[in-house]
Image (cartoon, rainbow, N blue to C red; front, side, top):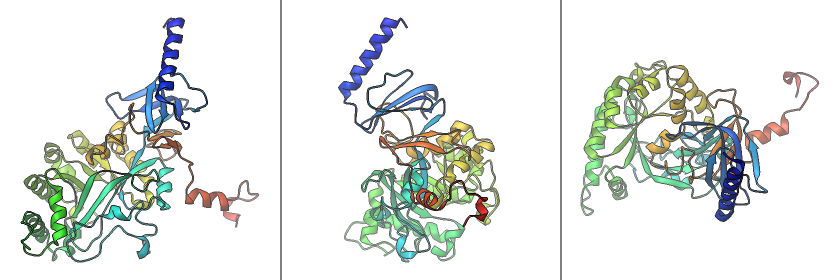
Length: 417
């Protein structure tokens, strides 16, 4: 471009930024390898300008407004904020301490009206622990209840807000062998109970039905309506097919969780457009429901056209999701597909892709600058931006480390008290 034209373009762009009102906490990341997770793919040597909690501009050699923070990525990867999985971040502190865990309703009655999101605490120590590792959103899961219907949860942004919820409620249903104790010892009993529960939800308000659900429970199932999102926790291929059939009959938006044998019915899952949340490290049968476990499950599903989501790291170990996605890539899953399994795929599956999962102009600014390939365990999050704000990169764990880890000891670490 001619120098005069370039100068004019830069001046015009700067004027636009001023007109937009550059926020006091505006941030410019320069020269990054930007994994947009959109059709634009990976953009080399690209700048991303953030102001007012929003990604304002993406491009090369963007003009830099005065008095803003600038970080030179020097070619390092920039990704959207990562998914922290389904779990209890914000609803649990110590799993073994009953009063600090709110993720499960332990009664023996079906309670689809149980909403775990009402117990969310953004001041939980688990929130910054996940955030400093690059995870900026999670799905609160209802789990471990006394029956196969555990209740519902919602997607929440890990930005410290008390009401940072997005998308519709998601119902959680446990199925298969490990849930047999919740249904009289038979998986056939599970489908009987599910049918009865959903049939009851269609009854008129004055009819008490057969008593599987409370009136509030019937109302909760009825609110699912057409296209309601339901996570079916299931591993065996035959049970997955039963879940697909049930979801189709009831017009539910199904997501499979577990899916150890999902590769066996990949074509059926792809045809139904049903995503699978799985653990890519599961390669051995842990039960009779997962005899078909294999390390390339994610790769086979992706090749068949199934949307793959990496999950099951646990609430206290969300950072391990990157390692799990890296193992999926090592066993045949395309690198960008593995990264999509931590970003855009869960965002789309749970209807929050307008907020999370991609790097696009005009979108909520959740970004992570990495020291290297985000799927490598040796890489760490160097900078984390959550809702347009630069994270302090402090958590309970880092504060304990800084307090008790002796710097430059005279003896090796094993000898330091």
